Each structure stands twice: as C-alpha cells, then as structure tokens.
Length: 189
Image (cartoon, rainbow, N blue to C red; front, top):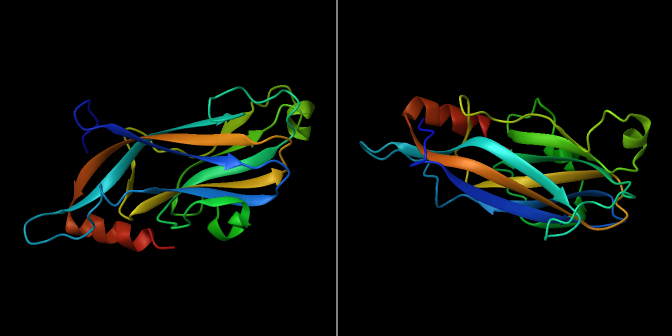
C-alpha cells in the first residue's frame, strides 16, 4: 500500500449536532467513485485505504470554539458501509450501530466532553476530545463498501448547536482476491 504524496488525498464530511436533542445522527460520505470490489479477469479489485482520521468539534461551520459553558457529551465514530445516509440528531439510536472497539466496521472513534460537563468539571486532566481507535500509516483501515458514515451518539444534550467534522487521509489500493473476499465478509452490517 502506497503512502506517498502521489497517492494520498483527502476526503471530508460534517454534521450538525442539534442542541437540546438526545440520541444520534449521521453524515454519509459516498465512496463509490474510489472503490471497485469486483475483480474482473486480470484486473484486481480496488479498495480505499484510510491512513489517518482528523476530528474537529466546533461551535459552527466556521470553526468557532465551543462555548466554555457547553455541557454536551457525545461519542462519535466512522463506520464503514453502514449506509445510514444523512440523519439529523435524534434520528436513530446508534446502539444499533455500535461504536465499540469490537465492531469490525469501526474505522475511528472518540468521545467529546463539553467544558462544563460533569466529567470535564470533575477532572482537570480530561481533554475535551478523547480519541478511541484510529488507523495508522503502517496499518490502514481498507474499505471495500461504497460508503463510510460519521455517526454520533449524544449522551448529555448540547446547550447550543455544534458542528462535528472529519477529514480522512486516503489512497486507492489494489487488492488480491483473497484479501478482497476477507474484507467483504468482515464489512457486512
């Protein structure tokens, strides 16, 4: 898998976390232009290797900082092939789309604690964004499904709207038939 200036490019998506609303939401990123999971004759299948994931949680789409009075708490992640579409906050319960490390579809995850949340107030060493799992340049997460979804689960309602955005550092990779078949089996919802 080639991680170099010639092959790596960026993809991104974002969602608005609505204030005063519980449960989850999502933003779907269509990957169909970058993936071909069918090997034909001598041509191999193509997947999308995700090497790095960068997250940002801001007060709005202009990247203003979160207000210091914010009490909102949420978990967030990227799920390969979830096919959830764009769903507003409260549109579903993400427990059905687990952000646990045991989920084979989990590409990246983390948690956010507003500055005035109970956890942030109780411990001054807790950062507002705590990372969970992430792919690496040495071991990327290779997607062979036609989408990836930014998913979030609000635990404590936000006092103001927030914007969660993600940027993926990716490259198209060719896959032999055995690897392609294994990835197709594990990336099933």
